[in-house]
Amino acid sequence: MVSIAVPIVSDPAAWTAATFKSPSDYTITFSDSDREELLSAARRIQRQGRLVPPTKLISSDFALHELGERLRRAFMQVRSGCGFVVLQGLPRAGVSFDQFAAMVWGINAHFGFPLSQNSRGELLTDAVDALELGLHTDVTAMLSLSCWNVPDSGGETALASGVTIHNEIVRRAPHLLQVLYRGFHYHRRGEQGAHQEPVTPFRIPVFAVRNGKISVRWARAGFIAGHHELGMTFSDEELRAIELFDEIGRESGNSVAFQLMPGDMVVMNNYVVMHARRMFQDSAGSERKRRLLRVWLDARSFRSVPQEFNQMGAQNGIPYREGRACSTSH
Image 1 (tube, rainbow, N blue to C red):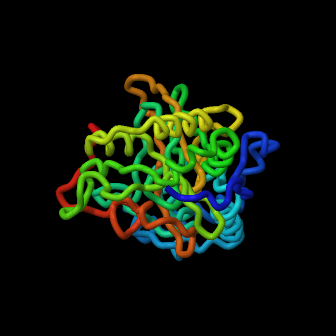
Image 2: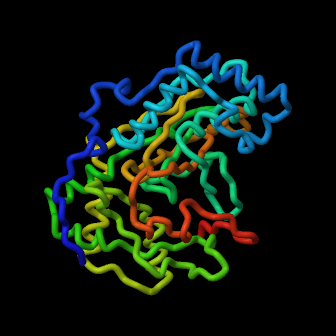
């Protein structure tokens, strides 16, 4: 077990819903000139025959001027502020999906470099699953979601601060932090390398302190599957800590929720902000089904975190593994 050196953490990332007077506190709305910058870049790339695939584009393809400076400030908010930003008003009307995907990729290039999201090596993926997802983090430093279409109903994105959850556990049951700092074994869902075990042989801490800052790694399904695979039962204290973590995260005052509209993007710091998706419905046969584009990102000197956070190996993300595929049965 570890000792907790910093019981209550003071950090801009330790927010609640009441921290924000309105969504404008975490939203940047693109101006007409911002949109024209993006459209001009996308049209130039299209004339050059390089629009598809967008993952071949680099940051210099979107050498934005005024918008580039605003995106630099947005990156600082993600890295060192509340941990997320909503970008509102990407060009959408009269824009093809390929043009939209290129602009999404270009904006993300101003936040960092892309990470593989699965063993197939995919850098840009669709988030279309209608199932509800509880609060969790991914195997990345940053995550962005960009909306092309909204569902008929539901599908809101919810965000919560892992730093706030840490501080609330300090207030309510500080003895339970011991097991959360120790962490759990995670199932690699069939995406492990040839010489890796199906489950991490090491524990991945839920909370970790580096340079006086709290970082979080939480994917309940992943560690429950891991311990089940290893035949390990959770102790009473571990069960209480797991339930308390989720309970605090579900409290309405500890999260913000919003519907990403067509042309909206959210970028979040995956080490301090957890995200969830509410269930949604689309009409049968609808051509306008909910569609979000997802990108995983990292940046140099972004945040100091334990090596164990990289559960798939030495590098962040999920490296390409020939012949491997994610199994959702775990």
